Length: 177
Image 1 (cartoon, one colour):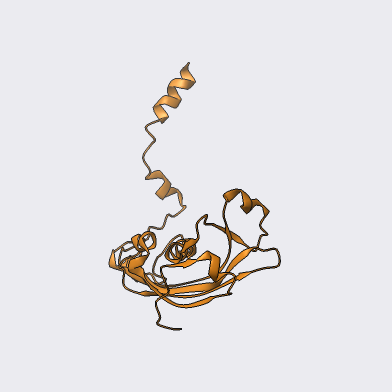
Image 2 (cartoon, rainbow, N blue to C red):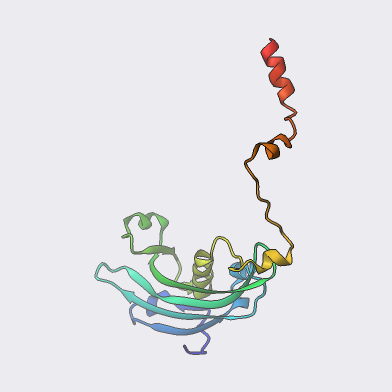
């Protein structure tokens, strides 16, 4: 993919009617919300966006984004390298109420101005494709933290070792009443 930086914004009056194609990169430093969820802000996001108008006069943004980033493992809090990739299929709308008429293949993007901030689009799409939980696939981080698995046996001697519940006294009081 090209190492060309994509522009910060595009003019919506031109890019859709001229069927523009933007291929390039965005630095993680220009994505404030997404950057907060990362272990560091080193890396580049690769982007390919295609602007068009369909037969229904809808302004369509299609393309994909990908990035190699580092997040914090939620087990050991050490950096974890992950690869994110997402396909984009947006319809540019001026009002949120128009989103109800979109087909299931499209996601709405509300922009009532002529200036479409591409970094906001990329920032939002990367946030949406982040995994809910990030952790190392191997159990190495568990070993580093010296976690030990406790096996509960079901024999009667181990059950006898459990302490009596402090609420059992209340049960006895209830039975007396």
